[in-house]
Every structure is written in C-alpha cells, then in structure tokens.
Amino acid sequence: MGDKISYNDVREYEDLFKLAPAFLLERFAKKNSNIVLKFKSQILSHISDLDDTQKKKLDLILRTDISVLQAVMKEAYIKTKIKQYKILANPKYHGFIEKNLNELRKLI
Image (cartoon, rainbow, N blue to C red; front, side, top):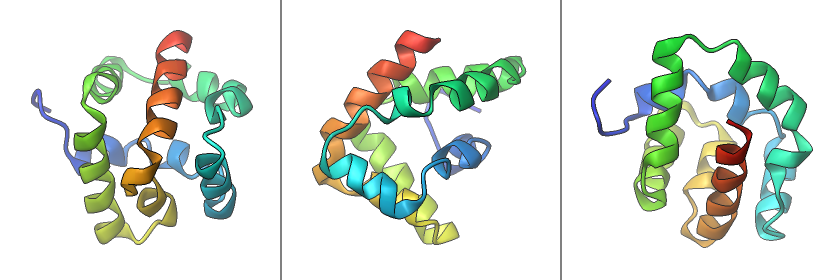
C-alpha cells in the first residue's frame, strides 16, 4: 500500500460496497441520500474489526480525491462486474459520494 489508492485497497471493503443492493444504492445516489446513517451499525461493526493495516487503507480512501476514487470504482467494476462499483463510478454521483464520505469521517 502506497500513498495512492488502487483497486487492491478497496477490494477488502467489497462487503461494505455491497451492503445496499445495486437498485437501492442507485436510488440513494439519485436522491443524494445519507446512506452511511442508514447502515451505521453495520459500518461501525465492520470498522471495529479492522486491523492497523486495514485502518490505514481506510484512511487513505477517506483522504483521496473523489474523482480518483471514482476512477478506482470504474476499474473495480471492470474487474468484478459488481454493479455497486459502476454506480459509484458515475460522475453524476460525485455529491452523493462526498456527502457519505464526510459522514463516514464523522463516525471514525
């Protein structure tokens, strides 16, 4: 793990990306909803189980520019065909990602 995010950095968090089914995630994204609050207990549970290396990766993700994150989401979708990645890679959902990353930062 360097100081630049890659698909390998987000791969460990695939379960978090799939907490919401793709059709729900897209609905939340279109409405610019705060999805972190809706899944707060599951997120907190997952975060509490992280080791130091995983926490550093999460910190890197939280510090990365959203356009870079979306490029990684696009790469992740190409590699996995997980629809949630495709949704998060969509530039029109930049604000949705920003809102939810800010909420996630508050939780940590």
